[in-house]
Length: 290
Image (cartoon, rainbow, N blue to C red):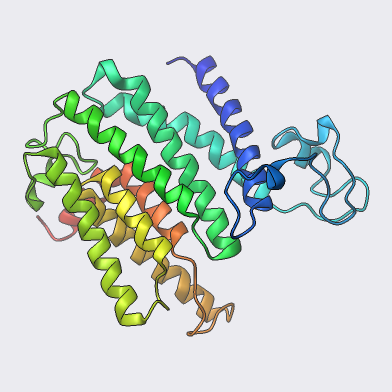
């Protein structure tokens, strides 16, 4: 892939990020994710309701052109807009690079890249919605589960080796955790394990520590990442979640009884496992001289 293609992918990612912003900001709990009544209509300032013109809708560029403020009323534009657009742009560049360096299935590379792009786009979307509404839409979890099943079918058809850890982002370290030679059993175990862990937490906390949305999300991630990668996804999610919670408590942004959406932490754990899983577990073992 040449630099020109990377630029095209980044710009495409910016456009997708802009659409993610539209969906997440207009989403209403109880409605379908892509309800026409919600996403229809011209974009406008949420304060003065001035309809935005075309050059105020260009990803990133418009934010800086307007100096982060509405040109009509001067209300500050949320940093969510440029941040989500940049994250989406990076997803569209970095995911293909990662897949092209690890995939053993050249006949399916483009399809695998597309699926992983969709996975991270939906993870980004659900993270924003969860942060704003403390809910993970069932449609997103279902879509992620379907994407996981499609990946499974591709890997099964391509006879992707499990024994050598080729299906794992942990590389050869995955063998240490005991892999099942049957790829369907391997990924089913991952989904069931995730559900078991979160199910116990939900039962013990009576639904206060975790929600059913998190329960469904970790099941979908199990189908996407498989065993033992799902362990790292969950482990990193808990570590990052704990660190963020401590910071919030110290800065008195949250109280002990306050709930913090966990979906974004699972999304971050998934991203770190996808991009740096091998390096993370390698560093962990080296830390203990293993």
